[in-house]
Image (tube, rainbow, N blue to C red):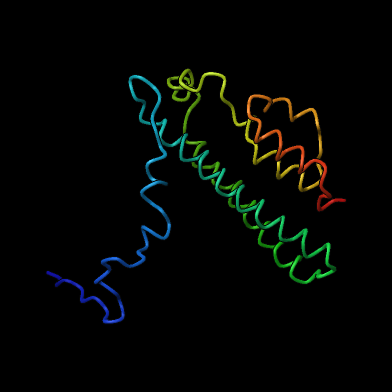
Length: 167
């Protein structure tokens, strides 16, 4: 039988009033965002929600990195721009590969909770449009999809009218 592993002396265990892993990452908020809408609740809806939420987190990081890249390009600092573009390539690969997990959801399983989404669709992802615009695929016809969201229209219009990586 194995004995309990000793905690290394460098690991902090008295964290009262101090920054913790959970508080730094705001896990209380993050892990409270997965709300099942189907009734009765369908087990696979959690997979669907987390898949799309993590995609949005990766897109947020791509946008963050692309805006920094544009700053470097605009100031003729190409070396750090290339480094960040390499990172973006890996983030995009991560985004692509994570869909393999969702592929374990069969069409018949998906239809059991699809009704709960109503008209919602990944096509409505504001961040996906921002990434498209930042990469140079600028189509103003995509903005009216977000007419119900004044802030989304504002950020998409600003991004549409800002030079992209391609420009």
